[in-house]
Length: 574
Image (tube, rainbow, N blue to C red; front, side):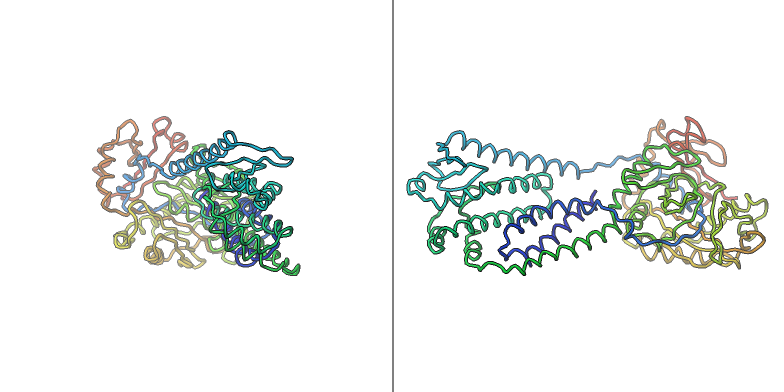
């Protein structure tokens, strides 16, 4: 939603820039009015548009996901099982502003209605005059023209004629339109600028009509000679407003613009194309991310995974694995990169995000919710050939690993996890100015057909952490390469690394952890046996090989009702 608002404000700024630079000084009042009324609507619609044909096509490849590596598991357990509730103040501020501006609008509207009800009225064919005794002013509201008694006695018909043009052109509707936008978008400064531009344009339109039937010099004198107490109401058309007099006089004296200058309106074409191209690349990624968040919060994912489809057609798969061709990060669209970064900033959640072309050929947002990997893992062949099978015949072998294919696969994962845990310097994060809490690093690498570690890339909250992750992965030993049909092949891997940044708040968080009610504390499994919270706290972090956190339905499926509050599975180093 925030991204949508930012785009809306940005587009309104661009529309106003075009108006101020190229259109405002021209005498095409009718077209300028249409421009000012339509462009705010376009700024609401364009961020919602999707043009798939504009998005670049992305190459496809295969990849295998590794379980998360948790650095200092004991601290991560405390962070992952903390059940603190946050208080979001933004909705309160928004609705407070909405209420305030609604009340102000109603107060001003009641003030106008009170003048209509209490003032002396003179009905004419096309309008009604409301005579004011106290206020020395002149303004219009729909078909009501409010005028001071002394002006009426002087038979100052030019003022009435001016206000009558406002009535005939229904300028009050324009002002009410922007008044409603101000209520809904009270925080958007561009709406106020729009209202000022349309108010000035209304005066240009009325002045242009009046001077057709009267002497310009006499009309100037009328504008300069009369001094009125202007009503402070933004949705009425006022004959006299000090801040607009100079601009009105300049426009009255201006020669009518040449028709050739109407070509300036064509400037909106490249502007619209640029906006549509931009939103096609970064189209409401935050909204898509929120859709995915909603799916995860529903807790409807079973062990085999499940497909969902969002309101805007976004295809989502949540589960522990998904067979298909995975799109590398470098080939993500801007929108997908934005969603990826949103997931990278998630705290206290054991999920990862990627784009997969599944077996049906659909581009799917793959939300990996479990670190246990099953049969349908996928690979990339070194020579680039795509293969339609779900499991490599012979997985790469870590030095010292023995056993069946399943055992070799598990051993590879465990050894990589142990290697990263032993060699990654998490202490370096303390001096990088990061906020306290759980952070994630995403590493991509390949075990090539010679068994060497290659093509290591990393994304992290800080470049120093990315470099450290690359250093650790590059230090992995040479392995026996994976094989398919007897031939050595290269296999790409994705590895999330999770660690905790401690700060001043750490002791407070630990206290909250220790004070948690046992009724809402997750089930703890250590070496296949259930243990208590107190027993878990006695485990030394250096003795922990790996840690897995299960939540929602996946936890209940595995351990029944005991897992309803989550499960922590701890594996001890041998």
